Length: 183
Image (cartoon, rainbow, N blue to C red):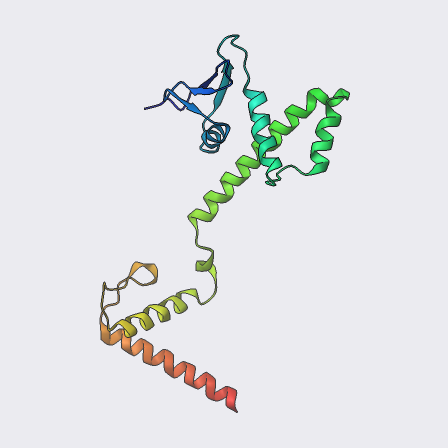
């Protein structure tokens, strides 16, 4: 199994082919982009000189995606990046961008965790009653086939008689509301 803590080492040969040292095969820029999307750190080095080429290849991946119409960076951001190379703020821009992306990743992770841990519909008024009606309708339509439904709060319906009484009561309530609307 690959050690995902260490960066994936990719060696560039003189022929410009990229070699994955973990799997002992050649890879493309798109493969490298996939490794990065999957959360791997990647280091690309020149086989002969040992120079680190990671930044160069990452920029090439971004440029290729931008040229395919997959625009992530607005023109004004790209323009500001070019300007930052010629100003005194050039040393602060990389730190600012790194901090911004770190905050973005953290907030995205927090949002995903919160959305995964709660059902936004569950807080809606009347959700439990609506869910019970749906289940009763499905059960009536299928003739009670399948498993016994576990209702809101995890309690199983005690008997079909009670469930039928509940449906009758809900139907009576709806009929009463409709008759009030007719008047």
